[in-house]
Image (spheres, helix red, strand yellow):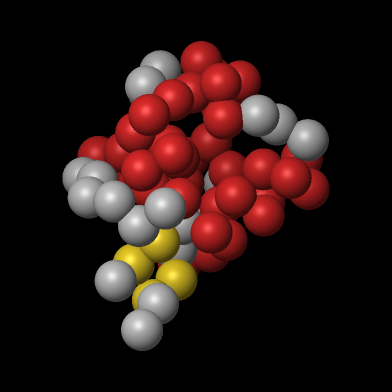
Length: 65
């Protein structure tokens, strides 16, 4: 399973909430919550978030066994 807990840690460091991030990147807050919790998401969403955080996908995701 893949989740986006590293992204959640970036959000904490930047003091940005899920709703604020969602507004900034025009995504539904539920989509961001699903990504953090290991739900299904598309690469389009990941691309938008990488642009926002100015990082590579591996900085936002991790593989969980």
